[in-house]
Every structure is written in structure tokens, then in C-alpha cells.
Amino acid sequence: MSLVVYNFLTRQKEPFVPLQEGRVHMYVCGPTVYDHAHLGHAKLYVSMDVIVRYLRYRGYKVRYVQNITDVGHLLDTGEDRILKGAARERLEPMELVEKYMRSYFEDMDALGVVRPDISPRASCHIPEMIEMIKVLIEKGHAYEVNGSVYFSVESWPEYGKLSGRRLEEQEEGARIPVREEKRHPADFALWKRAEPEHILRWPSPWGWGYPGWHIECSVMATKYLGQPFDIHGGGIDNLFPHNESEIAQAEAARGTPFARYWLLTGSLTVNGVKMSKSLGNVVRIKDALQEYRPQAIRLFILSSHYRSPIDYSEEAMAAAEKGLDRLWNTVIEVRERLARGDAPEAAEPEGFMEEIQRTRRAFLEAMDDDFGTPEALSVLFEFSKAVNSLLFGGAIVGRPILEAIDAIYREFGGHVLGVIPDVIRPDIPSDLVAGLVQLLIEIRAEARRQRDFARADQIRDRLRALGILLEDRPDGTVWRMGRS
Ligand SMILES: [Zn+2]
View 1 (tube, rainbow, N blue to C red):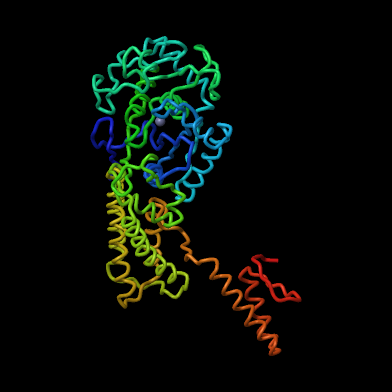
View 2 (tube, helix red, strand yellow; view 1 turned 180 degrees about the horizontal axis):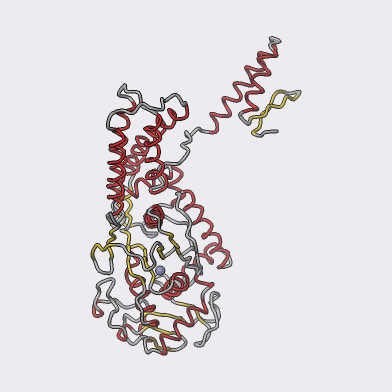
């Protein structure tokens, strides 16, 4: 078995062979941190997370770089997203960046997305960007007009090779003054002139300005991963012009290929409609997490292939929650039996070890075929059905079998897909705990009134062992969590 991936650059499945044996260098376009992350981010980064997790599971040493865009990503109106956010919240631009970068990682941590090994920020790589732009001008692929620098798409015949767009179909960039500066409507900015009132600006050979959005990824990806590197990931929504331009800049500047495999995720809709601020249907990850377990959100995302579009709805999430319960209930049963320690060492129901081996092979086969998480999940669900029949079928199930079953859940459901935690804690509402402790306090008070001090002390000691301390005060007994 070997891993096969769909390479968007060649539009076909190819065997995955990294440049250096046993190592994978991977870059994924990160978020622009001017607002809280939404479910579109969840779809992209959970999908990429499982790809990284699986590569690591297969024994590759992965260096995973995902940038933070904190300058240069403009809205259609020509405003910088960061500056607009900063004005909205009356914050220093870098204060806004810090706030939403933290918020982003908070959401990703909650979703169980493993952090990138390097999270480079665009604003910290301005000198490197200026260097690449200088090279592009020297080589005749870029030109300066009025303090701005544009990439000349006509100088690079391969422009369009990722998106499949021909030059004549390419739409021009936004505003009229910009259009007039460009030699070709599809030329895009590498560097923009900044007016004195523009806060986010840096000195450059072309005067004060700031970088275009695309250049940061060409620069940061290759700074940390080399050129070429193995995998470039991203969302299909950024295919053009962003990803297309990343390739053009890096390859025109250096004359070597940029990234070898392009893995792009499908987009996410909400109730069949594209998410947009103007429609008011943007679902923040934080809001979704209020309603659903993080593993259910992962399960929902992984139930579709990473390249496919996915539609978020209450029904879809209810199905994911239900699926998660089905999976977890079996896992909990297996782990409880293991914890009780009463399973015999030897007993092995006929043929079940083969079932486990079959599951193992089927799961790996699904994941080896371009990270086929929907098939991999159905392998786990089928397996759970078989495990349930075994557990409740009357046969005596031995410890080695239970351990082999749990290993499947830990490796595949836990490490690779991230939908089964190592420890499944029942979701106990905090007011239930408070109510139960209060009940015990009252029973203890009653015992003391009846001079049953042994029972009263027993309640206090058992609670202390559980990490709940009682304190008797003149006006009654209070409790707190703690060991001393
Ligand atoms: Zn990018």
C-alpha cells in the first residue's frame, strides 16, 4: 500500500513521493486575523489537520507551516482588512491582530487541530518580500508605477496553470485608478504605495508602502520549507488569484518549481448558501462550539471528502452528534470492561482478531486513497457494529481482544481523525455537581444531629478524596474544590 494524492496542479491522482525520504514539507495558507474565525476556517484547517496527522501516523516527519496574514489582504473596496477591523474596534492594528490571532488558536485548540510547527506573520517578513520583488523587477517580471509594483502576467506564460484560467478570461483588479496604472488588467500588486495616513506601511526602494497579499505566501513558504517543497494546501476559494499568483511569483523569481502537490479543500455553505457578511449567515466557530461537541464538528467535516463542498445545517449537525454518540458508546463500553479488569487473559472469540486486521487494512486503504475520510469513518462505524455484536452476543471477550479493539479506536479514531478522545468524560453539567454536593452536606448535617459522627466523617473524608473540601462555619457548611 502506498499513499496516493489528488494533485490539483496536474488534475490527477499521483503517488505521493516527498523530496526527502521520510520528510514532508507542507504549507497551508493561514487566516487573515481581523475577526473571529468561522466554519469555513474549520472546514479548511480540520481537513488539513487530518492530512498532517495521517502523514505523521505513516511515519513522515512533517514540518507544517501556516502563515498569519496581518497586512495586505484587501477587501474589494481596496481597504486593508486589518485597518478596517482596527477602526471598527478602535484598536491599534497590531492589537487587533493579536486579539484575533489568539481567538483563532483558541478555536483551533478547541477543535483539536494540532498547531502548525511555524506560524509566520506577514508583517515580520517585509524585508524578504522586498528582496523577492526586487528580483522580479530585475528579471523583467514586475514593474514599478508611482511607488507601486505590479507583477506582469504577460511576462510569465505559465500564469493560469493551477486555476486553468487563460489570460483573456482573467478579471481585472478592483478600482479604476489601480486599473489605469497596470499594463494588463490581470497584473497584480506586489507592493502598494501608501499614503501618509495609512498606518501599516514600511519603507522600500519604491517609497513608503505595504506588500500585496500574494507575495507573503511565496516568501514565507519557501523561507521555511525551501523551493520546491512538497505540499501546498489551501481552500478552493483562494485558488485564483491568490494561489495562482503565489506560484507565478516564486517560480518567476527563482526559476525552480514552487510546490509539488497542491491539495485544495472544497468550500462550506450554510443551509445551501455561501456564507457572507452581507447575508448575515456567517457562523463563528465559537458559536458552533456552544451548541455542538468539537468532535461532532470534526465528524461532520470529515464525513465529506476534503475536496468536496460541504453544507452546514442543523440536520447535518444532529446526524454528526448522533454518529458520535454511537461511536463513543461502544468505546466507553470497551474501556469500562478493560478498567474493571475482569476479562480473562486467554479467551478469544473465534475470528475476531481477523476482523480487527481487516478493519486496520480497510482504514489505511481508505486514508491512502487521497485521505478518504468518509470511507475511513464508515470503516470505523462498521467495526463498531461488529464490536457491539461481540460484546453483547454472550461470548466471553478476553482482554487481548478488548485491547486490540481499543487500539483501533485510539490510533484511528483518536490520533488520526481526532474524533475519539483518549479519555471520554461524560458531559456533566456543573449545577448537577453543586446539587449533589449540597445533598451530601445535608445528609451529613442530619447524621451529626443524630450523633452519627462516624457517618458524618465518612462523607467528609470521601468528598475530600474526590477533591471536594467541606468547611464548617457557624452559619453552615460550605464547600470548595481543592486538595487542602
Ligand atoms: Zn497563501
